[in-house]
Image 1 (cartoon, rainbow, N blue to C red):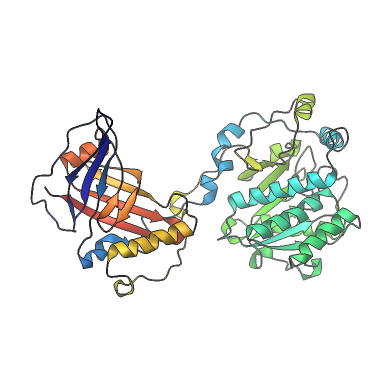
Image 2 (cartoon, one colour):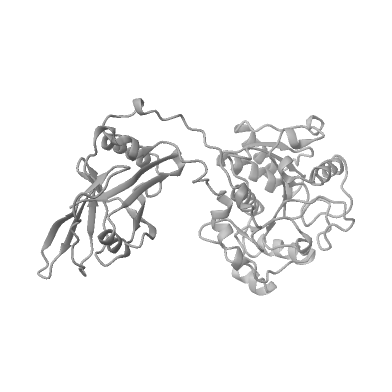
Length: 447
C-alpha cells in the first residue's frame, strides 16, 4: 500500500494533515475504489507514503545492480566542470610568442614575487587535473611521464605526484636528471611514494602494452635546436605511437605546454612530429597551439595576475569553479553508443536479503549515506496523466518507516494533477557509485 498524506498550513497558520491516497504495490494491481483526490491548495507539501507491502513484495521493490542497457554511466569527461565551460572557452584566446612567454615568466618570478617552485607546482597540478578530467581512472590507470631536464620536466615530476594521489599508477622516465635542489627534492618526493623510475633502455619499443597514458614533459617553450639523445629517440617513440590509426588501441599522448620537437611558434614544421591527443597549455597557449588538431586542448596554470593580463593584452577563458584547468575550443563529438561502463557487482539473490523490504531498503540507504553519495535521498518519480502520458522528475525522500516512503509536493504541481487523474506511479532510487538501484515499479491508488 502506498498512502498519500498531505501536510500544509491553513489560513490560520495551523498545520493540517490529511491522508488522501492509499496505494497498493503490485505488478498486476488494479484500483478497487475511487482514489480520494484533495482539492487544489496554494499551500505546499502533500507527501506520499508507501506502507509495508507483503513479505514477497521485495521482488517489486529492489534491485541491486543497474540494468546495464538502461543506465550506462556517461564518461565523466562529458560532465566535468572543465568540459561544461568549453563554449565560453572557445572565444578568442591569446596565443603567445616565444619572446612574450619568456618575458611573462621573468615578470612572474621577478617583480610579481613568484618562485619557480610555486609556478612548477601549479603547472604540474594543472596537468594532472586535465588528465583526470578526460582519462578516467577506471580505464587509464598506468601513466608514463617522460621528463626532460628543464622546467617542463619539473612540471612532469609534479604531475606524477598529483596523479599518484588521484589514484593513478605513474611511472617516470627521467634520463637527464638536474642536480638543482628543486629537482632533487621532486625526485625524493616521488621515491617516497614508491613511484618507479624507468630507465630509457627498459622502455619497450611499443608502449601500448604497458601504459594507458603517456605524458610528454620533455621540452617547453624555451627549448631551441635539435633534441639530443636520448630525447631524440624518445620523441620518435611517441611519433610512432601517435601514427597508430585506432586511438582505442594505443595510449593517448598528453603534451605539456609544447609538443616536444615542435617549433614554439610554427608548430610541427616537418609534419613528422608528435601528434598529441591532449595539449595542456600553461599560463597562455603558445602560437604553436594553433596548429594542434587533437581532441583535447586545456589551459592550466591558474596564476596569471591582472598586471600581466593588462600588459600583454591576454584574453583567457575563465576557470570554472575551483578547477585548475579549463577546456579551450569545441568539445569533441562523442559516439553515444560507445558510452559504456563495465559494472562489477555481486549478484543479488532473493534468499540473501531481509524478509521485510523496508528493512532491506533502510540498510541499503544507510550504506549510501555512509559512502558519502551526493543526495542519496534523490529519487525519480514517474506519474501518468489521464491521457496515459508519463512524466518523470526528481524529488527528495523526506522520510521512510514501516508505514511508507514520504516525499513532498504541491497540490497544484504537475505530479499532483497526474496522481489525481491516474493513480499509477513509480519510484526509482539510483545509486551509481554503489551499482545499485531500488525500484517501486507500480503503485496503484485505491480509495
